[in-house]
Image (cartoon, rainbow, N blue to C red; front, side, top):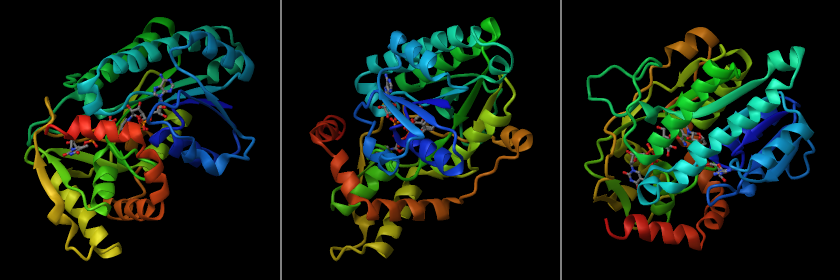
Length: 352
Ligand code: NAD
Ligand code: DAU
C-alpha cells in the first residue's frame, strides 16, 4: 500500500480517488481534518476496503511510527499542508508548524522506517513530496518560466514554509540517502477545491449574487493546471522519477486573474443565467494581497521529456468541467461554508 498525507484535502482527495480508479493498490490516508480536510470528498470510498482513513497530525511522530510499522507502505505521497497564501498572511504559525515541522517529522519517521527495510523493499521505497511553484518567487513579464534550476525566492509565509520543506527533503536525500522525489506544481483547479481559492470562490460568490473580489489590478498571472493532470504527473514521478530530482509540473497556461474571472462568469452566464444580468457585473476591485507575486509560469519540459507526461485537459475543457461540477455539487459547497468559513470571509475581505 501507499501512505498518502492530506488525502482529504483538494488535491489529495482527487489523487486518492484517481489512484483507486486506476488500480487496486490500497491507500492509507492520514489527514488531520483541518478546515480544509473533508471526508465528504471521499464519500465514494465509504465502503471500499482499499481505502483506510486515519485522522491524525503529521507532527505526531509516535502515530506515524505506529502506522508505518503496522501498514508497511512502499511509498509516502506527502500532500498535507496549510495551503492558502492569504491565511498565511493572517496567521503564519500554523504554516511553519505543519509545512516545516510536519514535513520534518514525516521525513524522520520515513528515514527510521526505510533504514530498517531490506533488499527490494528498501530499494523500491519512495518519499514523494508535493510542493509548489510559489517557492521560486515572482517573474517579470519577459522572464523565462520557472525551470527546476531557478533559485528559490519565496515571498509569502506560505511559500517560505514550502521552500523550507523542499530544502529539508533535499537534505534528507543528500545526507541520509532517503529515496525522495519532489514535484513543484502550478495553480490547480477542479472538483473539491475549497472556496477560499480564486476559482471556487468566484463560482460560489457569483451564484450567490455576491461581489467577486479581484485583488489589485487583476493582472497577476498564474499558470493553471486541471487537478487530474497534476495527479497523473505525481503518479508518473512516483513510478519513474529519478531519485533526488525535482520535477516542475504545469500546463503551459498562463492567464491573468481577470481573464479567469471573466471566463468563469461567461460559463455561468451560459449554464446558469442570472435574471439580474451578466455575472461579470459583480466584479469588484479590492485592496491587493501584501507581497502579491506578479507572475508564475512553469517550464514543464523536464517532466515531459523524461517521463512523457503531458496534461490531458486544456484550460477550456478543464474549466468547463469544474464549473459544471460546482453547479452539480452545491450541497458540498454549502456544507463547507460553515461558521468557520464565514469568519474567514469577514477576516480576509471585511476590511479590504
Ligand atoms: P488543501 O488545503 O486543500 O488540503 C490540505 C490537506 O492537508 C487537508 O485535508 C488538511 O486537513 C490536511 N492537513 C493540514 N494540516 C495537517 C496536519 N498537520 N496533519 C495532517 N493533515 C493535515 O491543500 P491542496 O490545495 O490540496 O494542496 C495539497 C498540497 O499540494 C500542498 O502541499 C500544497 O502546498 C501543494 N500544492 C497545491 C497547489 C494548488 O494549487 N492547490 C499547487 C501546487 C502544490
Ligand atoms: O501556484 C501554486 C499555488 O497556487 C499553491 O501552492 C497554493 O496552495 C494555492 O493556493 C495557489 O496559490 P495562489 O495564491 O496563486 O492561489 P489563490 O487561489 O489564493 O489566488 C490566485 C490568484 O487570484 C492570486 O493572484 C490572488 C488572486 N485572488 C485570490 C482570491 C482568493 C483574487 O484576486 N481574489 C481572491 O479573492
